[in-house]
Length: 279
Image 1 (cartoon, helix red, strand yellow):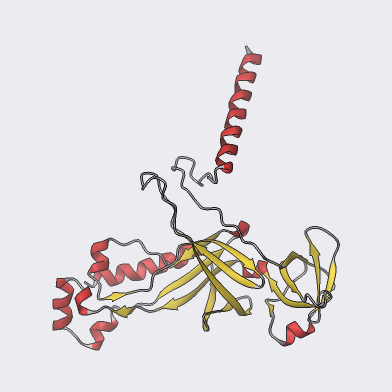
Image 2: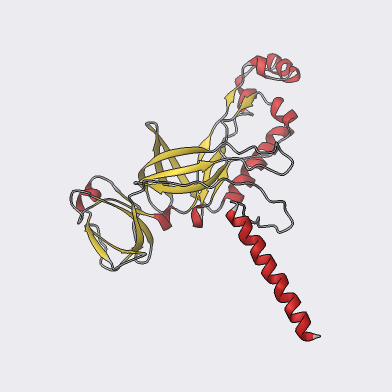
């Protein structure tokens, strides 16, 4: 009897492993909550990346970066010019995960170095809303704004939010700034905030940061539909323990490190609830 039970349990385990393997082959992945339904998430392949990845080793300094690649022996690169040009992002410490761009004309020189362990975490910047056109407001809000169209009333709605992202291990990302509200509350507000990208993945590509955003397709939605995948490409300007400056389309964005995305989103939600209570 014990032998039969053992064989039965073994077959059940093997069937589960095969089922999970099949999900991975189809591009599906198990959610954190085992009871939650599966969601389609696209596989994003980044091609053409020439950056070398590895660990920063003993011997690294302001003029030399010693990289221990994940395959092979440690290699020393001269990074004097990169330091002068502000192309060393963060301060690599021994054992940190780093990325290095090598000069194709001089393979002993690093033209760009970034501390990827230091980059991981939650980064946010303040965002202010803009006043809607009167025609975009609800009838109730149009009436109220016409009666109380003074600056002090307007300023009660101009509550800044924290936008940004959390960069995690395995190239996973999470958006900061998404607030769940009913459409009626959103329509009744005289202000509007910029759209929040639903960041899900992050990658490095030749010394630039790629942020990938998409909304997952939930069960019950249109059959065969695939999410629209958007990719933001940003250049690094500066990074230390608490500050990060990125550039996109010539515009600089200054980020500050937060403890985590959950607390940043909770603070934004609380501020919004206080604003809604004034209506």
